[in-house]
Length: 94
Image (cartoon, rainbow, N blue to C red):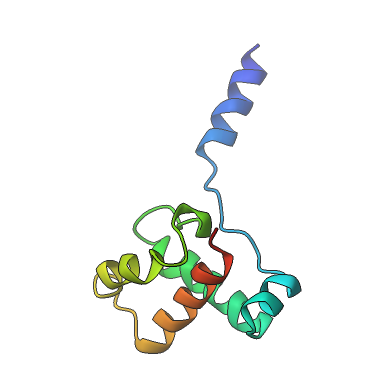
């Protein structure tokens, strides 16, 4: 029983990372897979520094730009970082 509780505690406390983009995601968004991969890395590093990295499906594609408007200043994103993060989140959103 103690092992089960420990396993539940460890799994519950493990941060859930955003999903990796696939070739199909890149093709659907008509972008390079490398850009989506870089955007995911930026989400983990820049967003994950203050809170759990957001999951792309947490918002719709139309909602992500507004959410990024609110957070990009706080996280000191330059224009290219913001573009890559938005590209990743929008491309993998619902």
